[in-house]
Length: 400
Image (tube, rainbow, N blue to C red; front, side, top):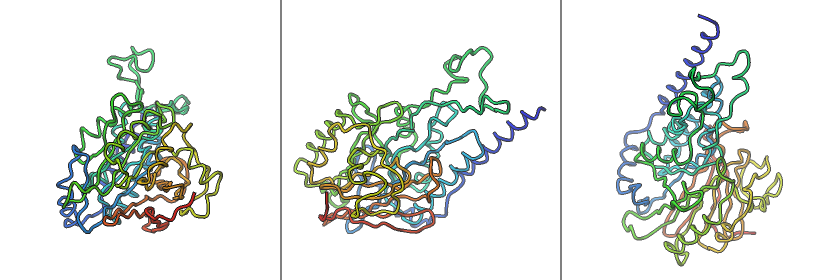
């Protein structure tokens, strides 16, 4: 057997071992806690888009952002980072015991995944949440449906591509059925279809068919279990583009939000919370360069805001609604702050994954929603258990 074949077998073996490790890693979770969560959510079904909070208790949400599963999947380094990301999420989930999880984009690095179906990596990323019986929702980031980019090292003298094209295929994708050596990647639509088909705890939704982009634009309602008609908060999820779309929340999406919010919350009496991946231009206003205003709360201000390409009306609508409490984004791995802006807060999550750029410690932003009166509090839980940057986002004391 040639040295090349030995190296290929060793590499494949390593990747399989690491994938098995990802699936097998599961920190101990108290059975009583599992039972409590099942009872707490037995009246919550993804079909009706309603989550429930118990009377007298709070509703806790964990935000996982920029996990970047599948990065450098053909190397020894890549699969190890996925294992590390699983450990980060497991630590946060076991320490915080959230009622709900939001995957805030860039769940996978699709441009680095040398297989047709990146849903395999997406499934690994949500496994710590699913294994604990916690419901979740997701939005898409700019890397989630990026086209596959051929690594140059595959064409070197020591290159070991993980897939060999059939002899009768003259170029990628020409083999029978488009299979074989095709690296077309997986689209937003395919990722969402797989998540909903395979997971009954997912509250992710398709958007209206005539909306562009349409996949992850939806709203969830948080109500009290003793009075389902008493709404505690609305949570809006929007696709901020990237990958196969421009990096922007389109005017069509803004109009959809306007119609939807006017229909379900016409008098702005119920608090509203917004989630998308790429920060908009307003984030540059509160942090124009490498610094933020003194009223911001966070621990990382080490890079510039990488914003959407344009403003097309969404922010103006949010500014006009007194019910909007906060917007949460990811994308910039070196930022984790919350800054007051007009009638709301603009917040970053914390880089949760070991994939993606930056060597800063990983963690997750936590939200805690209470009712009667409404309160929205947030803090960051780190991978080592440390908690910092607590902020009351429902405070009426805000500055422009």
